Length: 231
Image (cartoon, helix red, strand yellow):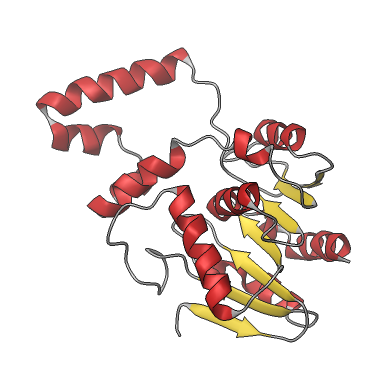
């Protein structure tokens, strides 16, 4: 199956990739951790080499899919390393039950920041323009990431980014380590602090000179921090 990478032996460790990314984004981690664990990295539906979405998926739908995948593959109580959007899915999974033994969440998305006046004005303008010139509105106001998506993926994207997960995080009981780059602008430390307040006993490691892709910006420091946490 092209959409799945499996290697190594031992306790199960799975990887959940970010939005518009794929399983290969964890290459430095797969290479390192497959020496100690049985690694499984897969592409979410709609990404990489996985099947395209037939309907818009929410975070909950991706969590359902992940649970079904693990059950089908006979993977029980694995460790998980998740990045950005993959962190959203991990949080949703863990809010329902202790699906994972321990979780390392890098640049974890899912906290909606307080909306500024500038943001509200822009959204209001977009909605007005969309009524009279929808194509122009999408071209003028939509992000580059959003404009690159198919119609089904656009609807899925809107479902995903408009769901705040702090209430889900409050239900998490398993040990969680957040790893963030100090220069992360996509999921800033202020968002991670909200997660930490919601998840009792959660920990944080900040990697210097790293951004949103901290696991790629400084893979050695990331891998060592995750390894120590797992052991």
